[in-house]
Image (tube, rainbow over all chains, first blue to last red; front, side):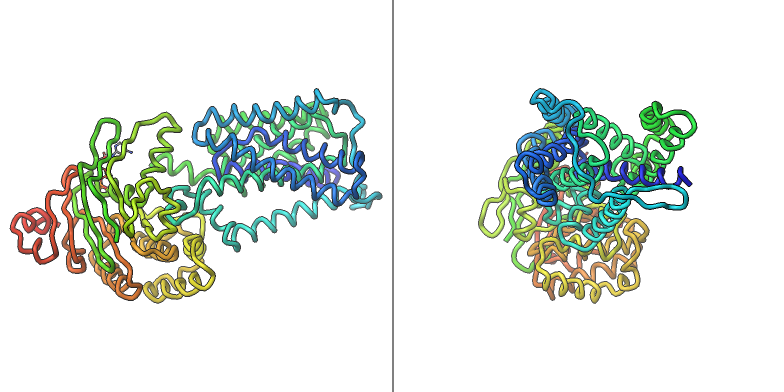
Length: 288
Length: 249
Ligand SMILES: Nc1ncnc2c1ncn2[C@@H]1O[C@H](COP(=O)(O)OP(=O)(O)OP(=O)(O)O)[C@@H](O)[C@H]1O
Ligand SMILES: [Mg+2]
């Protein structure tokens, strides 16, 4: 029971971390190595607005999500647009931005265990024999709503449909008047906001530390590679596989091995099925 | 309405289009005929601006160098350097070779993605129109693009292009791999679309025979150069054309 409950919670938080990365890659084919940094930016901006400036918590969150979106858009507009399509440069450029942000925070004095955000709601609930706090439940609910919301957005709005078209065949989308650079920029913005949403939901459960930026980046890459790069559904299922595997390791082997599970998952996927769980279509295309 | 003057395209040092000039007037159907690798697709990509995207992607990936020369004139403006998305917005819409449907989206979604440039009313109206021209799609609305037969895919591809509200519709090998019956149906509907929507259509095909009855004017490409051109009557009575493009099809 414990495994089921905590496995699910862990999986949802992994899915939240990976969602933004998967979206950006799926649409623009840019692996955004600054994803973890955007996650941390949202944490620190919310913290500053809430604790230093004294805005209400909710307003601080909304504002920092906006900051994230703008940051993502600017990152694309001024840097990534020049390297999109150059495989190695994409990674170097986005990782450099991520490093600059994260190490910038460290340099600027955001160190140690003093940075925390309040949970949304105190208290807890018993699920069977397992106590679960309200914040984690809220996180699950919002996570599920977010996925549902994204589904509706990508299937029923003009922009969402255009993003889907571009994710599947950029050039065919271009023939229909869908501007790929504009869409890639939007995708970066959405991806950054999603990183922020993940941060808002997950960070109150612990401290805001620079290191978790790297951790989030590795976890999102793991989720996306195991699920098959470019497949959102794949990323979602992969989050559950890795999420449960991690909890199982914690219970039966030891919590030090959590990270190893993710890395092992990446390596195994790359050896056994390089295109990932849901990459069949792409695999077929490569063979043709 | 849409014209190309002295168009030249090089892939590295290989010349793919050699000084081609073509013209398509308002409400005309123009045929571009040529064997494999004659340069039909290259011409279609140059007209629709996709060539600029291909060139950019090759440059980014460190691939081959593509050079473009000449002019593309649309409604008396030179659009040689206009981005493909803006050309589509201006009304030049390409329905590409091999259809390139969005395979993981349903037929209806494919059409609605095509309606990106359309207003709500236009999209609704065109969607109804597409279903009317291709009644076969009615039952397939929710089928994924990847699970359609070749003929069905082609109908969706043309429908999707129509959703973008073209003034000039470019069709690159729409008949590729289709049965003669399907070919005839598609050609008939293409003529109907031209008449009812009052648009211009440029069709590139290998074999002239199935398309010939509906074209007003045609060009024959060989190795990237237009070796012959004329109205339907002129070409039909030309013995060279007869043997080369009607004998074996
Ligand atoms: N990206 C490219 N790089 C190099 N050469 C190319 C490229 N695309 C086309 N070519 C060459 O340009 C020439 C014209 O090709 P194009 O695709 O325009 O022919 P096509 O008439 O459309 O042929 P098909 O009937 O086979 O579709 C061919 O010799 C082809 O090999
Ligand atoms: Mg071709």
